[in-house]
Amino acid sequence: MKYLPTLTAIVAAAFFVTAASAQSAKFAAFYEADTVTLAEFEIGIDGETFAEELLTTIRAPKHKEFLIGVSGVANIVTFTEARGRNKAGMSTAVAEGIMNLEVRYAPTGTAGICDSGLIAAPGALTFASRRQELAVTVDLDVIDTDLEDGDLAATLDIIGSVTVALGLDTTAAHHFNFVAIDLPTSGEYDVVACFSGDGSVSVTEAEAGDNHARSFAAIAHRMITVQEVRAVKDSIIDLVN
Image (tube, rainbow, N blue to C red; front, side, top):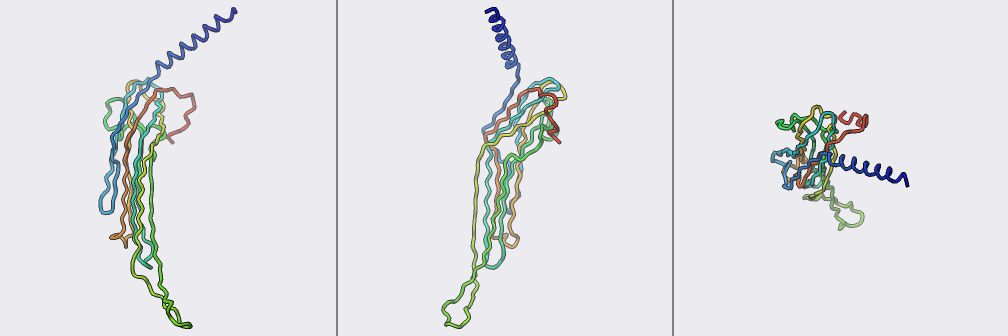
């Protein structure tokens, strides 16, 4: 029984240290629910690309790390339509929609962080993407089967075309973790999730008047979370390079 008070004291002390550590942990988050169009491309219409800055602020001492999580609901739409004429070769339509993400950070008040801020590891990445290619080839003959036995069958070409279209609209939630390594100074930092859109559309040149392609990328519900941490020594190995 003489060991019981000592054991109780140790458990109580451990609980106090754990509770104190939990209270001192720093955590910040920012949430957006609106939908932002990042890119839209269509044959004959120039595509536009936008960047969305999702920002939160957190204070940290020098030589700490930020563990950063970025979540978002990605919506990508691709549509392709190709018309194949008989014996005219392959006709194609291609649509690609891409959503990119980069996390940057800088002392609070820094302007243009998505352009000039420090880059969190592992750097820029593709958050969501899809490439859709539709190809049509038509090669048909008509054979006259009414000829008498012994006569050569007459082969006639078909004049006409076949049009095929495919549209895909997908929405999915994605998440990725980033790390801001060895903060250069102490103080408040702005942490920014920089979403951007890209894409392309193309059709077979000879069929440009008939074929069609469109791509669209948007980001809906999204959240950035930032936690101040201290990485285990030598556990972060060249994440950026």
